[in-house]
Image (cartoon, rainbow, N blue to C red):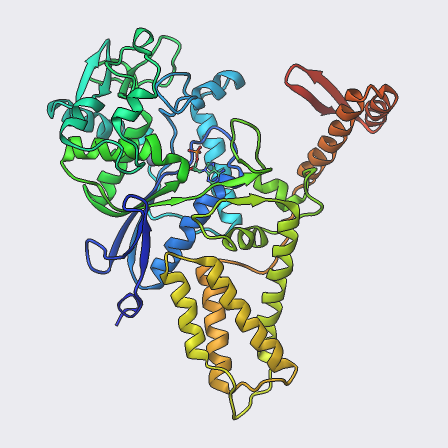
Length: 494
Ligand code: AMP
Ligand code: ZN
């Protein structure tokens, strides 16, 4: 008997806004799709929180004995600057600024993403398809949507007709919005756009002459709209209808709403049975985001090189901090929170190691099977990691009491504690010993100079030019030259 037949898993479904008993389409197998990163810059800790939430889910589903096909894409084209249908492609823009090929940008940040995920000990997905590798599949879906009468062609671009779709289907059911409200709250941009209605979204965009990322299509040399890639890749690898679709909360609208509309229009199916959304990691109470600069990068945490940190923290401590909150709750990042998590993490690991030193008694004051089931109950309740961690701390209390001779544990209890802690700490939460990552000397130097540049900027703001000049001159003596430019201060070595 597989574990999933003994444990009853419930999942909070974002579309019904309730916890539902989980039943996969095919017994014993699960198809799970998670929107991956747009690879135009380093992933920040907020992005990591979403991917680590789904790593925990993937790990637990596998542990229960399900055969999971986990597809997480790489967005390497089509994601425009403002998340809508205008502006420059994020990757093309970065390539233009750096005067490199867009695919060099894609390569660099895909590698960064993989390295970061591996430092966090996240499992790789089963399939990691790219948007640019699935242009043909995207064109095929557009053709179907046009054929079904839910899209129109204007000047070489193709738009999804949201109003037409809403006549027979319901646009907005995932995000809880309705089209009338959207219309009432939208300024009329018709004069600036080829769209019939501002709510329509691009399936294919004709490339302007300066747009370098372009492919041939029946309508124009152009590129696919951002929402389309996920419909194309999830359908290709998981089928028209699959079990779980995940992503960050900010993708619910418009991205996931548009995915539903595309599938219903082209394939006549509601694509997803369980929608799961991970909530945001915030910094100073505001969403961590690439675009605003309000973020912290994983390597800054692992090296301790960021002015908001008092020290370095390991990937496992960082992950432990995240898992101490439910994936559906907003979580605010702070140095103090990490310090508290590190204390808790070390306490848990020490207790786990101490288990082998406890003297075995014939008597037992603890019910290990009930405790073990409570660990499962926590995870069965929509992957409630903070409750699981609270249960692990129950075990810590028991172990410490046994060590001090206040309670007795028999061999069976010690074995169950050992196996269950091993399972949940290492296999399900994917934590590792508290290893501090060795950053390269280059990273350390960059971090140290960044702090000095920051101090110099502060001195200049305070009109303390004696200090700001001193910092610059002393760095020069040390062979480090500061250069002030319009994007800030950079440095070079002699
Ligand atoms: P992007 O690379 O911008 O497409 O984002 C990749 C993933 O990170 C998406 O699932 C986003 O929803 C998620 N994400 C972005 N910002 C945050 C944040 N501050 N906290 C949690 N997840 C985030
Ligand atoms: Zn997506």
